[in-house]
Length: 481
Image 1 (tube, helix red, strand yellow):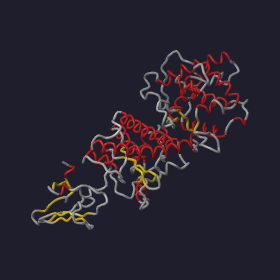
Image 2: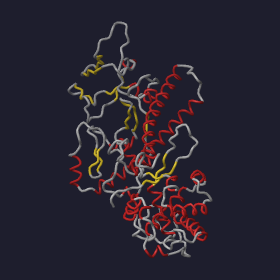
Image 3: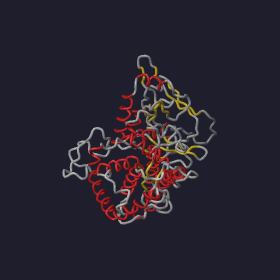
Image 4: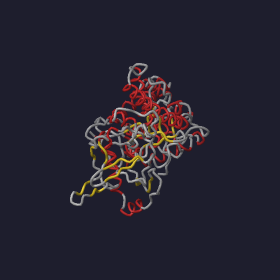
């Protein structure tokens, strides 16, 4: 019924015989007008409505030659809305988009997170935030962590409830996401450290294609790419099960809808993947961002004395030091945890060579020590207690550990298996960096927590290789602690 209705006046005053025409703040009431609902849609037709106490009229504000069809304009609508509501699509639809949305659970989390951030902000900041919106700029802004709405009057609560999100192509072979989508997505993928930040770093505060990005923004880019790739694969798989050529007009409209969806996805993914490749492919000042650390990087560019011991530990723990086999055997977490733990021990050593340590690693470790409070000295010296339950310590920020603290967490269980590998490795090589009393279950669990929270799943950038696994990378957050 809604596809046959028109957005009419908000109400009719029977006493005065007047219509109250709906404004921006008044919801329009849908009405049925037999006859006018037969007019077809043309997005370029200029029309206007005339409302009176006794009649209503649809006025075409352009000349129409005799014998030609009189068109209506249904307002800008995507092909998805047209085919679902009206049964047809447009070949060149400038309003077409690819729909996106959050699950109810994620939408509820985003809503709660935004409420917590607002509650933490002083009222003066809220007043300042309301007064700093830049007119004419539709991109969200950040002022001291406060998300500012765009100059248009978007109802944030309604967007969250209805999941009205999309990505569409614009001029100059570019694209744009719906208002607030990237902002909400950055909240959805934030780690516990980022959730506690007063000055939350938003992925939508600047353009995705700039170089000034954080772990959160990298996570947003990677996750959005994987979601779009999933939609792209689904459409292509569905196309393989259909006839090569449409058999009727309905199939033709459906094929046009899918092809336009693929056109949007192909263009957006091509642009986003090219940007991600430029950031993550190489780890050198000339190409890529050195803060993005891959498995291959830690196995080739670590300090020489640490690298030899790390390779020996990997051979004992997962019986390989080859990056491909490490991924196949599910040893990526172990490799990164062992590397981080060894790097921490190595940096504490008096025998290390100063020129062997990349300054960014020292800065990163300093940041981690201030952000993820280290285990207490008492817990560091504890070597595999008989009681498997590890007491919860208030001074240790541990985002992976079970909040109840009643049972040993999965992270602690895994850390114990890591310690077994470390001990087996040091028996073979007593002079190893890892033959250090400070490497305990607590220390390994601390490192594992960091790897889990500061790392990001990086999508397979070869869009033709659907069977290849995504890659785990660590991002070195280098903010001042």
